[in-house]
Length: 573
Ligand code: ASP
Image (cartoon, rainbow, N blue to C red; front, side):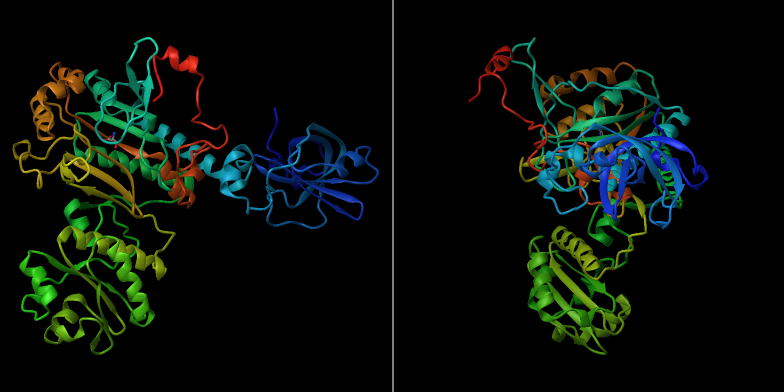
């Protein structure tokens, strides 16, 4: 079996070896031909002298051809410190071309090829070190997770890919059934119901590295199919799930990056996260928390703020430290446009330089000391202020906080800040569906089943794990009482018949010995993206789809033969 070419080093000098790999680059320097031979492990340099019987072959080698060489390891004249094998090269006796590459659609040594071309020839693009390493990091994360969960006595169990359609949450992919005319399977959005049923089967601790499918509009960090490290446990509390997950993530970071993450992770309630960071996935690698200054304006003459207060609105600010001189009027206008995209009406600002200047300076002269003391203002600080309805103010300032931090480069990219967000709302109002939907999913246990009717304020026993401003996972304690499950379906607007039709098998199982249980799923791609330092989900999937959900390499999805449609009893509109 082949060994890694880069296992060889100066201690092997004088040895005769057979190597295999791809021709990454060739150079002809005064008769000597140098070949960078690449395999999965990296590059090793080959040297062909004019006296070699295969010299002619070597001089016509095409990049990316696959070759086998027989040669002798020797000490290099000029050491290359950037290569693991930089102290040696291999003097070639014999060269065999195993597969000659034809003209390449793009030059692998040049990174300017268009993404579409690279996706069309994904197998070529995967030869690049950075992509290859991402895929290997993903592999390491999966192995680390398996090792951890196996040690904790979890059992890996597969669940079906062809499932019952239960439209709730994201749109599903449907698969027509040939055998059952007119019926469809759905691809799972997650193994949620099955993993709960496995608890009812008595497995107690389940995990799966599970493929999930959601037919949603795609963004840079979304793909129609993705993977979760999915787990579920019986007879546990929130603390148990959180402790286990912290252990799992710490092991992954240690195994993959040799980083020790301190425990326990910070915990914030949803309400606190929104109050302080304007987000349920706060990035805490920098400060600039949102401060409520409504109280300071209670006697204001400024009609806009006065109005907001009279209408139960709020006035909040972020203080950008030592940055007043970095923002011109024009820059502030741009920030105003930015917050308007999040529905804020306007952005007020104050600069402090011994006195306040800025758009609302004349309205703060009577509360100067309060502002200075409450917000610990120092010279050259900039205050960005939004007033209005609470949801809009928090959300807009949350995004503004992130934007300013990026613009001013306040984020330390070497930090890995994990935190839990707990006590999520049970329901959220969907403008699109004009009804309340489950904030997490309909199997989440309410904090207090007696308060389900207060939809705006009912809380769930749900938690998310957040890393550097990304939601990397989430889960909940589940309902194990058929009565509570029915109440939740009712609160979501399902009639009993509808609930039974969709989830009858689950409700029945809840009446036949269901243990208290809960769990969580980690988004494998998100985690890998963060560990690889990329913001593009396609960089961590071997064969990804485009944002229009197609595969440029294989041309999926494609039209099918009418005969196939016929067998499936399908007629296209
Ligand atoms: N199935 C859930 C999800 O995909 C995770 C969980 O609750 O365990 O978001």
